[in-house]
Every structure is written in C-alpha cells, then in structure tokens.
Image (cartoon, rainbow, N blue to C red; front, side):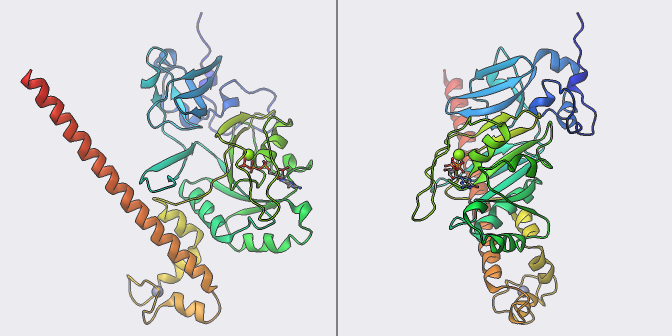
Length: 360
Ligand SMILES: Nc1nc2c(ncn2[C@@H]2O[C@H](COP(=O)(O)OP(=O)(O)OP(=O)(O)O)[C@@H](O)[C@H]2O)c(=O)[nH]1
Ligand SMILES: [Mg+2]
Ligand SMILES: [Zn+2]
C-alpha cells in the first residue's frame, strides 16, 4: 500500500480559517517551512513529531498516530519538530526552527535557556494592576522581535480596573509595531478577540509573570477548564506560580497554544536587534549624533540627549534603553565566553581520552 504523503507537503499559504478538516500534522502546526527540510525517504524512516512538553528526563512528542514519551534529545525544546528515530530516539533530527524564544537562565549560571520553538505569535500578557511595568513589557517585545515573532500585548483584568485606558496608552507608547488587546480573560471575549492570531495551524504562546491570566486565557481558547488557575495575592497582585511546565495544546479550531509558567526574571541575551526594533526612535536619532560611538551620556552633539532636553523623548525611556543594551551586551559576551570554555573543555577531554586509549 502506498502511503499518502501529500499531507506532509502543505501548500505554502497557511490554511484558511475554518478549514473543514486539517490533516493530523497540520493540526499540530506542520507547515511548508518544515516540509521543505525533508523528503519522502526520510519521512518513511523517521516520522515528524512535535515536542508538546519537556519533562526533566523525557520529551512528550505528538505526530500522526504518535503520542509518545521519549528520552530527551539534545537542544530540543517545546514546539520543536523532530524526525523521530524510533530505534534511537536520542538521535532524532531537530528540524530548523522558524523561530526560537530564549533567555539567559535565571541565577548565576551563565547559560541560555530555550523557552519555545516555532511560535508564530507571542502574546505578552500583563494585567491592569501592579504587574504592569513598561520596562518588563519592553523586554518581552524585544525578545519577540529578536525571534521575528509577532508580539501582541494583552492587558487582562480590565473588569477589575474601570480606569484601564492609561495602561493601554502606556503599552501603546512602547512601539508602533505592536497591537494591544485589553480584555477580561475570565469572560467570553478572549476567543473572538484573539481570533486574528489563533488561526488553524498557527502556534501562539502566552508569556508573562505569574498570575496575569495565561492559563485562564489558554482555558478560554480550549473552551474548557483544563488548566489549574489560582488567585493572586491581594496586597501586591503577585501570582502563585501555579503553572510549572510549558505545555502545547491543540484548540478546537486547529491552532496550537503554548501555556508557560510565569517568569520571575527575563534577562535578554543576543537580542541586540530586537532591542533596536523596540527603541527604533532612539536608534534613528543616534545616527545623527556627532560621534559614531556616542554613548549618549555627556557627549557634545548628541542627538539623543538633545531630544530628551527638548522634551521629545522621555528620559526614563533613554535610561531603560541604555540598561537593556548594557545587559544584553554583558550576557551575550559572558555566554559566548562560556561557550568557548565549554568547547575548550570538551576538546581537552577528547584529547585525554584519545591519549589514554593509545596507551592501552
Ligand atoms: N477578574 C479577572 N480575573 C482574572 C483575569 N485573568 C486572570 N484572572 C484571575 O487571575 C488569577 C491568576 O490567573 P492564572 O490564569 O492562574 O494566571 P497565570 O498567568 O497562568 O499564572 P501562573 O500559572 O502562576 O504563571 C486567577 O484567579 C484568574 O481567575 C481577568 O481578566 N479578570
Ligand atoms: Mg498558569
Ligand atoms: Zn548620542
């Protein structure tokens, strides 16, 4: 019997909304971008599967007729597509990613942490309460821009904040290239308000601090109370870190939704171009500074400082821009130093092993 491979090679245009039926792979987010990286021979040997969840020592993968837990594959994260080698799952090939969200791992460990792969839209969620911080939103938006993912800022809990317009205005001032959606995550509206991004075959991710309503929104899209949610602390509006794993869900219309645990800290790394995109106004101005390497601190002829003095740019925005650029430069340098050290250490181990085996 010859197998029908047509579903592995979808047309390049994304499936239409309300498509009558999606193939099992398209319903997991398989797109022509991935199909182009493989061929019928490889598909026959190793079926494509998507990482739906990462456990400490295992990956939960799903594909056409596949729903398995396999040992971890190096460097694979939630949302990745693997060509599943059933005999040696650890050697499964990770397909090139359409996008990758990563940060510097929290704590003193100089590592990068992969958060999610192959996301089309990043819903950056915050609430109309003390959680709302422009500096944090700018970080998330830079992260999305860097990964070439469409960022959408979602402001939840409008029902608890009748005066929420000033939150919308402050979010809008972050960048001209983002959409802001203000909503009550517990109501009926999220599904229709987010429909423009939650298309069949697309992957969307909810990112943000604990307690802002990421799981509440995932439940709203699922149309069921699948995920646990928990009330926030009343005094400071902080969440209780209810969600502990990143998990990918298929919602009824064929869109893939990633719920994530609230992040305590988002340290950027290798995000210089994302930061430039968020602060494109500052970046444009800095081209007019007298000195090419102007730090916009005390230099004469600094166009950025002039714009601050004339009231065109908020001085706190300049301070946040400087801080983010410095942090990104520091993290990127320290991570690449670590990578170099790891590489040198690996080489040393290989050489010692080689010498030992020669001596035998
Ligand atoms: N009134 C109201 N309550 C909301 C809204 N969004 C979320 N909540 C409530 O806020 C609390 C936290 O929501 P969750 O969905 O658990 O938040 P989360 O972002 O998933 O939090 P973590 O899993 O800890 O990262 C729950 O009690 C929700 O019912 C909203 O728009 N309006
Ligand atoms: Mg949650
Ligand atoms: Zn300058």
